[in-house]
Structure formats: structure tokens, C-alpha cells
Length: 216
Image 1 (cartoon, rainbow, N blue to C red):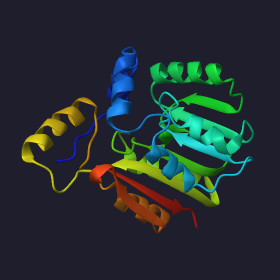
Image 2: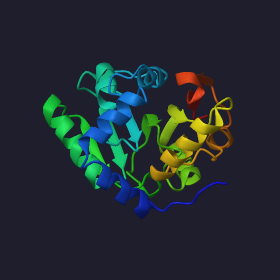
Image 3: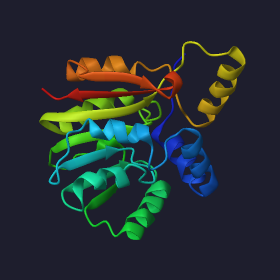
Image 4: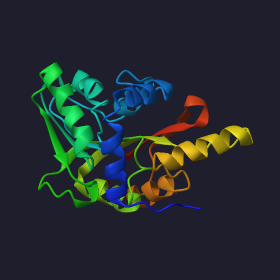
């Protein structure tokens, strides 16, 4: 059964977790989702970026996508990272300072409340649509914020169909602690909103998927 969480519950969880850096490093390493992740690279490669692209990074967290995005922008263009948690954005600010990136804007806000007055060339969401409380509204808002022809890439989590019951039970507990809900029909909502999914592939043993959709 799908679980209902609030923005405040998710914000508090990730504000607390960022105070334990080892947790973030272990999580990224164990999930093959570091700043050099082949899965992040694959998702970002689908966006068709140029040096002048303006990219929306939804639930950007501590900025693990920024290094790969900047490899396309070369400190040109612009990245707007939006996240609920002020704690993780403080860590993201340190990442920006370390790399001297000047073309990245960080916004502490739910994506569903984000009304920047501009439209984006591309949007990205990695490992967050199973966490964002109102994921349906989030997908709708991302669609609205894209320019016509703008691409949306997702690195998402999914329940693996063939999994030992003992392992699945362990993961269920871990997902619950992290406010992750794998019962959501994320793919169905993206397809209904964007009218089609241009590409879809499963990876990381079936625990992850990568998709691309385009705003018509």
C-alpha cells in the first residue's frame, strides 16, 4: 500500500541525515549513485545539453549531479537546483565553493511551489520521485516548467520483481526509514503528463530505471 508523507517529514529526515556525512557517502557508494555514477551519466546524456542550456535539477540534494552537468556546460549556461531540505543545500553550497562553479542557483523549496518565471531547456530528477511527497504534482510542475521540446530525464528506483523475500523485507524497512515509496506509479504519471516516454531502460540489477520524456 502506498505511504503518505508530508514535505515537513521529508525535510526533517534529510536535514538530520546530512549531519552524518558518512551516511551520504555510504548511501551513494552502495547504490552506485556517486557523483561519477554511470547511471547518473546515462540519464544526463539523454538531455541533449549544450553549453548554453538552462537545466532544472529537481530534488538536487547535495549536488551529486552537478559535476556531470558541468562537464556539458563548462561553467556556461545555468543549473537551477531545487530541494526541500536546507541542510542538504548547505552541503551543495560547499560543493559549489570547492569547484568554483558560478552558474548554479540553489533554491530551498518544494518543486510543487516553484514558480521562477522562466522555462527550462531540460529537467532532471535522480532517485527522488519515490520520495517527493506529492510526486504527481511534481511531475506536472516539471512538465509546466519545460520549454516545448524540452527533455526530462529520470533515474528512478523500482521494486525488483525477482527478489528473495528476506532481502525484500530488509529493503522495505530501509525504504520506509528513508521515506521511499516504491508503490507509486511514477512511470504511468510521466506517460500521462508527457503523453509518451521516449526511452526506458532498467539497470543496477533491475532496482533502477532510466527514462527520457519530451514536452510536446
